[in-house]
Length: 230
Image 1 (cartoon, one colour):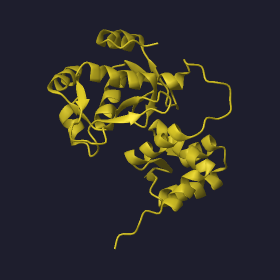
Image 2 (cartoon, rainbow, N blue to C red; image 1 turned 90 degrees about the vertical axis):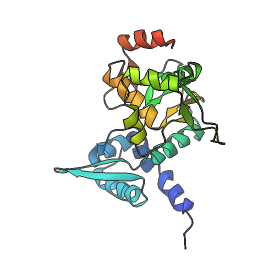
Image 3 (cartoon, rainbow, N blue to C red; image 1 turned 30 degrees about the vertical axis):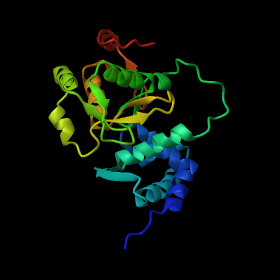
């Protein structure tokens, strides 16, 4: 007999302001220690331990021991999607309006793929070039297909498509961006593209942050693609 999902338990877990802050910190995509998460959430390490145990018990985090330290990361891509979804629907804090050029709105990581105006601009460009198209078999309209033209382009770029397809996750999908309210590219292909742009030094990740900066080389190369960056 299959038990129903315990939504109330999950809601209580992510509803705690300290625990949701820990999840948000891990949206950087890096593994963090309990001490780092405690500092980020503004609580003592002892208090953080109890919160981390709850997140582990509910399958939201995964922990790995290395030497004297234990590192925590989001348990799956689905958990990252949950946190990003909450960011989209959460009410805005009553602060001064964010300037349009705020770095986190321009370019950032959404777990392991690119978001912000850079991410949405890249997806729009890939669709416009015909490298990606909507998956006609997906009635929800989220899944994307790589065209033969797109496969050649990504291969020329240096992306290992066979390796990307071998990853145990969605290949390419739309992910609604919380700041742009438009879709950016998620899934294994989105992660592989972000990895490639970083290794090619087109983008640089800010230390201890989700924020990404586009390098001069990246602006030049993506400009040749037809992507205009602010």
